[in-house]
Image 1 (cartoon, rainbow, N blue to C red):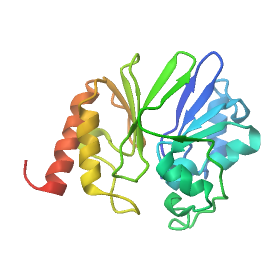
Image 2: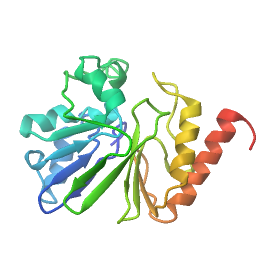
Image 3: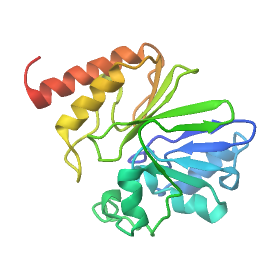
Image 4: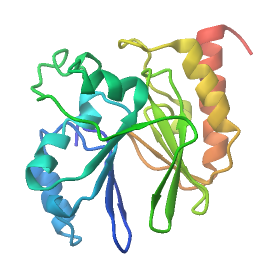
Length: 214
């Protein structure tokens, strides 16, 4: 929905997990969509954030009004939010209101989030923001890329606070070396076939843009 990030639903026998939450501007519409497949905000047990920009984190308060999900974010951004520093959410930049939040789990490189039979391996992929992550579900051959990588050779912008072109190139190179067939990005459509090739294309494009000709 417009500026909102994609929201990924993972439903297992005992857990209802959202990866990212959108801006919060369309929270009621999103809840209605969830209800159409038998899920309510109250059911949500876990929220995993790929980074803390407002278009990914802004929907958290509405969900917290309905339930008590555990919230996960990389340590580089979680520690700032937990100290009361909401700068990296970019809420004020975009004229949005975002109350203070509490991040329950500060993620780090190498963590594995286990939700019944779903295992999300955490890769720290800075560049778009200092605490950006990708999540690799090896059994499903799937990578959740947040705003690190998009379809069509595109990738996250680096002109927001803590954005870093060289770090983004390194992160794209790293994920291009992983094995995955499907990629779910923070914006745009899913890549349902040969996503590893698309990741390599994004890496090559970023490398050319930020470090000169290949």
